[in-house]
Amino acid sequence: MYERLALSKDKKGVLKLSEHGHIITDAEEAVKDPYVLDFLKIPQENMVTKKALEQKIIDNLQMFLLELGKGFTFVGRQYKISLGKRHFYIDLVFYHRILKCFILIDLKIKEVEHHDIGQMNLYLNYFKSEENVVDDNEPIGIILSAEKDEVLVEYATGGISNKIFVSKYQLYLPDKKELQRKVQALIAKEG
Image 1 (cartoon, rainbow, N blue to C red):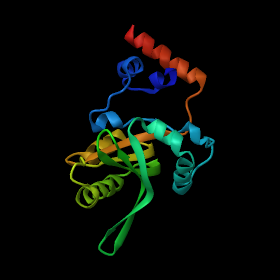
Image 2: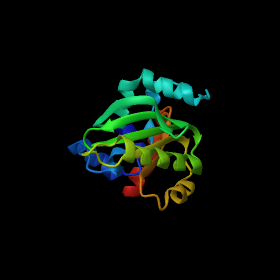
Image 3: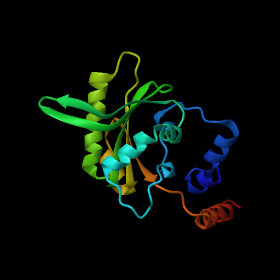
Image 4: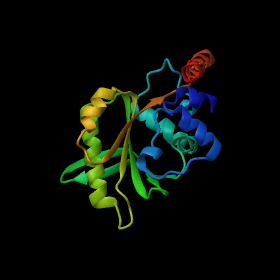
């Protein structure tokens, strides 16, 4: 909790969560920013490929599901969708039991670009039309990237009716001194 509190933008929300647990009622509550993937044990000085990152997540699926949060079930990786003669592959597909919807995850090892958001929008439209059944809610897309430009994301997602979220991932937690500085700054700010 100490680490989550230091990293979170919603400090009061994290404290409330620690006291009462988390009841998910909408898409925004199911998505974190950032996701901490330190259990993958990828040294921070190593540049990892997208394929290697995906494989590490699959190899550590139980830990990844715990990081995602309550309600996620694994559906598949490299999930193939076909549009005419073109084929696309969604990195990871989950189903959220509580929200009753598919959650599509696209992994990016660098900063997310505007065309990545357009691609996720295509995936979500496909799932709405071709994969959802009667009681399913609209799918949610998460682009999980190493870096995130908030302004680019805001403009690229503006006007899109699909639920697309761009979240950062971290391959390691900050060291103890950095966490202490963040907590001290938080205490000073709130005090």
